[in-house]
Picture 1 (cartoon, rainbow, N blue to C red):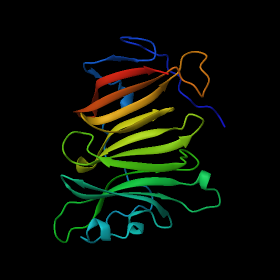
Picture 2 (cartoon, helix red, strand yellow):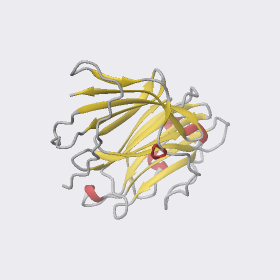
Picture 3 (cartoon, one colour):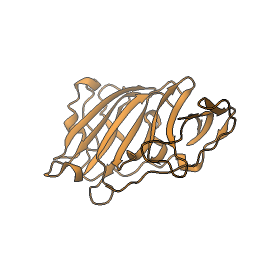
Picture 4 (cartoon, rainbow, N blue to C red):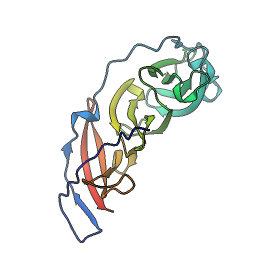
Length: 237
């Protein structure tokens, strides 16, 4: 399997005794690779445009929220300032699950009696153009508006567990973060509210098993798709 790790030279802003953390505080803007809001994309082919019912989230048959013929592989529920939401992932059945079409969608019900559930965003990953091995989501407020968002990871594999992270601001129907990573995990942060990014730091000559350090950054949402680094710590291995 091709090694698609991203090697990053360690940057130590302040140092202490060997084996302890190097760190810096303050805030700074995250590079633009962290992502920006995007216009609502067109829905994948075959994607339903509505579920014509006001059923509670837990009662909605999720197989009616994905393209016809696809199978549901994951379901997550969120409460947002705009209403209840369902995040659902799917894959196309076939003989090779490592090369299957996959996708993920965010559905929202705005609470009006008799109104339908509607998809506010969806991303499809075709096996031929954008293959992924799996899709997972974590629900939590990461934009600081007291409304739950979805942090989604689309796994592409490789020895560095590579993939792409997205953040869906569900209430606003916006994708406000996207980052392609290897040897990195991104999860919700609660204090401060935002994202915690944990990444391996490889010095020249480091073997794949043994990065020289781990860098942990906390990002906070600045609005309009912008993110700020609230804190950063580099811990030597």
